[in-house]
Structures are given as C-alpha cells and as structure tokens.
Figure 1: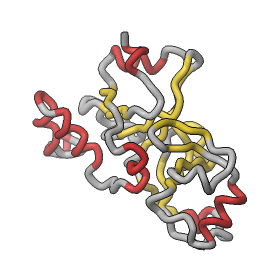
Figure 2: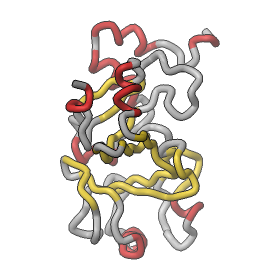
Figure 3: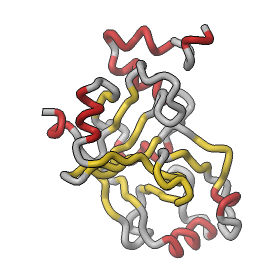
Figure 4: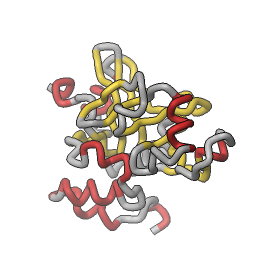
Length: 186
C-alpha cells in the first residue's frame, strides 16, 4: 500500500520523467505532513535569488530562500533543527521542526544564535489534497525514500541533491544521473 509508505520526514524524489514542470523537475521534497486530509512538503533543492534580508530587512543575515512549492508563494515558511531555541515548533521527524515563534526566530538570527545549518526558509509549499499524492505515486511521478540525513538535511548543499539521490537509488536510475536537465536540448 502506497499510503503506508508515505510518512512525515520522508523524501519524495521526482521521477526523471517529470520534464518541463518548473516546480517539480528534479525536485527533492521533504514531506512535512501526511494524513487522511492530504500532504504538505517543501522542495529542498530549489534556491531562489533572494535572501532572508531581502524579504525581511530587519533580519541581518543572508540565509538563502528556497522555492518550497507552488502553493502560497507569497508566504514564508521555515524548518529548523533547534526546537530548544524556537518556541511553538512542530516536529516533523528525526529532529526536524516546522515553524515556531517568528519574533523569537528573528531575534535569535540577529544575535547570531541561529546559523544557516540550523534553519531553511521557503516561499510557498507543496500541497496535495486527500489521496492526490497516492495517485501521483501510482502514476510513478515520485520515488519515496527515507531521509537518511535526518536533521542535517537543513544544512545540506542543494547543487547536486537530486542527482545524489538518483545515484543512491541505483539500478535503472543511474542512467539519469548524468542526463541534462532538459533532454530536448541535448
């Protein structure tokens, strides 16, 4: 059963066949929530050209902002691995937390208590309605895998993240690890 495999904290890796979809081509998504009503995730490997200071000038830091997904791209979300510092955080899994008190977060960043390996900011998120993600899994749009990085995924470099995941899968996926992002340009 696909639904039993889908769990908070797992990674969704875009199948190589997802071509031409700007949001999801070569995406690696951290599944932040999955329940009977639907699923929520954040794309971990699509940095934008903005920093947190560009969006919130009172934050004196240059942490990258990531495209979290196509839903609510005018809202800022964050995950982190420091729940002891950020009150009201919700645990995703493996020491990864979602959200929390934003005023405290701003102060902690400005005071140098939060480093880039502790927090990741996203504009938007990826969302699926009830059973939508299961249907996409059945259509072979996604590969689900455990997050072996646990809470260190927050500081993980994104440059080759999808390729690294495809190589780890091995087998029939290896051929895709060196394919150009858009095979039509090859």
